[in-house]
Image (cartoon, rainbow over all chains, first blue to last red):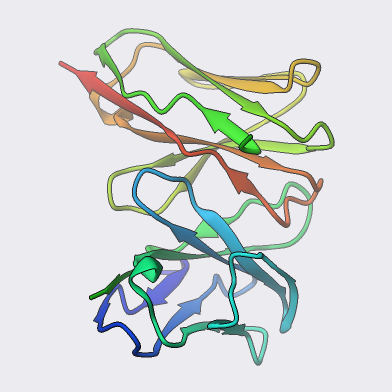
Amino acid sequence: DTGVSQDPRHKITKRGQNVTFRCDPISEHNRLYWYRQTLGQGPEFLTYFQNEAQLEKSRLLSDRFSAERPKGSFSTLEIQRTEQGDSAMYLCASSFGQGIDTQYFGPGTRLTVL
Amino acid sequence: RKEVEQDPGPFNVPEGATVAFNCTYSNSASQSFFWYRQDCRKEPKLLMSVYSSGNEDGRFTAQLNRASQYISLLIRDSKLSDSATYLCVVSPYSSASKIIFGSGTRLSIRP
């Protein structure tokens, strides 16, 4: 399977715990994006990387959220001191970064904060 | 006002019907437009890009009206498998590095 993969697919945690999600993009894609989606809403942009550089962050990305893409390949999204409001689907997407730059999404990580 | 607005539906239509969705966007500088499809509990998948001249892909036709800042999606001869949420997507950048999703329109096709 050469699509975008995310791990874990589901995560249940207690409020106050830290969680980390991983995204592996399509191998030749140099752009990687993180989104958050809650029930009944479309995905909301969180941040994006071009290679290893984090080029843009949404105001939604509070200080408790941090994302990295150290070698320009896989990325991690960490949420510290989770809150119940962080419960959502976290989607990762990647793109080639040229022309009409279609983003391809991974299956997402569903986070439930108890 | 949301940057991208869609009628949430649900639209419930019989198989074989024609159905149309509209989407409005607030940023007149938007340059790239897309329709994505999302099945229940699945990731969004690109359905089609929307070009200024309008474009068609089989039973699906997308139109862009820059003056009125809306895009539309028409589905002809709807199939049961078309049941999904359709997400309108707009980008202010020609390379679509940041895209903004609408909340989606739910479509349900009944036999």
